Image 1 (cartoon, rainbow, N blue to C red):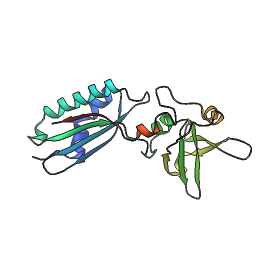
Image 2: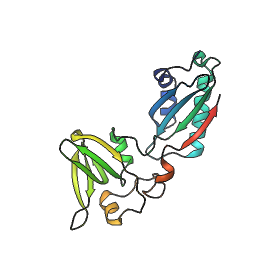
Image 3: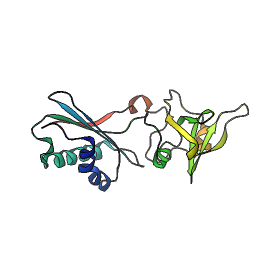
Image 4: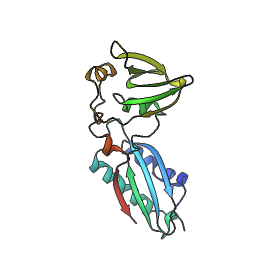
Length: 190
């Protein structure tokens, strides 16, 4: 019997993930012949702690072991963060990305700026100008696509100040962008 569908995996684990204080950001099931992979992407406002996610991985594994959906098929279980290239589609993504630089596609323009405070249905974006950084409000419904950008140098302190800083528990820009790209927190072969 093959690995169950993405929908079935989501059904099996969503309550467990929520009880542990995480948001289930995505599930990917990859069928690869006799050895498949199940990737679970989780996040929280406080970020991810390695030990807590390792524990979550073991609990998810126990849930999978308790149902017949997986049969005897071998698979690899990965519990990970969504990665920096995840599109910002929910309000929680905007809260968590505060202080990060993002490319924001609107109907008639593209804005690149530092994400600021989310307030109702709009977000502050700190944009560079000739006179220095300035804040612009962007309505969430006007955003067609937004993705955090990788930064290789420390951000301007004034931009970070105007953006409202980095949320507690989140990694500051340029401190870990290179290692943050979908780093697998825990992997279990079954």
